[in-house]
Image (cartoon, rainbow, N blue to C red; front, side, top):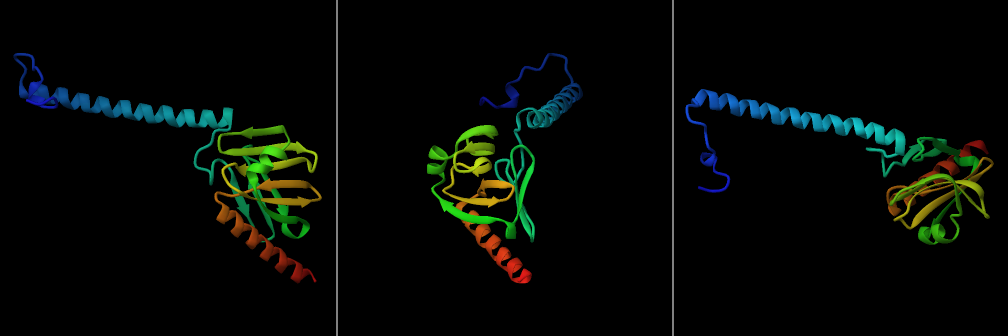
Length: 181
């Protein structure tokens, strides 16, 4: 008789097999209802957390979402707003050393959210004034975009993806400049 042996349960005397089967089925349904209630509470709290604390589920990477189009690019920050720029109207550069940038040049928070993995929002520093920063802090590479509307500093889910995006944006920019000439 092991610990999980069903025969060790004490069945009250006078209980028929049919009554015991009904009791087992009732406990099975009870367990299913409890599981459904837990899932329901989770789904409701997920929406509440996202509205009240900016905690999101299922976005492309830690709450930041890229918006890639033929003539422009945008990054959707933790605030839910897409910050876009047109390739041909922008000075786009790729940089390395994000940790150094964050430690020395990031500046002060104006209106931003910071998590363990992401810095996202409006910051102020001496070089750019108020600017948009949307980065995964664990990465090394980042893109800086300067145009008449301001500055956006961002990266994607990996250093390789950030590099590939930069190359693709430069290709699109060159094609658009060639068409305009």
